[in-house]
Length: 95
Image (cartoon, rainbow, N blue to C red; front, side, top):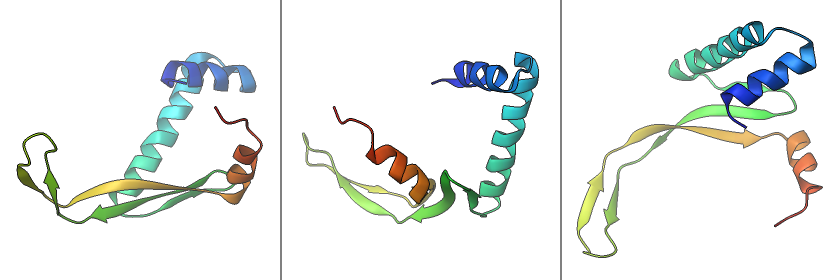
C-alpha cells in the first residue's frame, strides 16, 4: 500500500474528504519523524514501537573483488511489533 492508497483507505473508513485524510496522515508522519529525530521512541498500542538505534562501524567485503571497505556508523530506525500484531500475523497463510 502506498501513500495515496493509505489516504484513500483512511478517507473511506472515516468518511472524510481525501484532502483532510492526507493532512491527518502527514501530521502523524511528521510527529513520528520529529520524535525519532529527537532520539525518542514512539509506541503505538496494538501496533509496535519505533526507535532509533546506532549501527556500529563495520568492515564490508565485496564478494566479487574481495575489496574490504570500512562502513561508518549510522543511525537507523528499528521497529518492534507488538504482541497483538504478532498474534494477528500468526494466523496469516505463508507463501
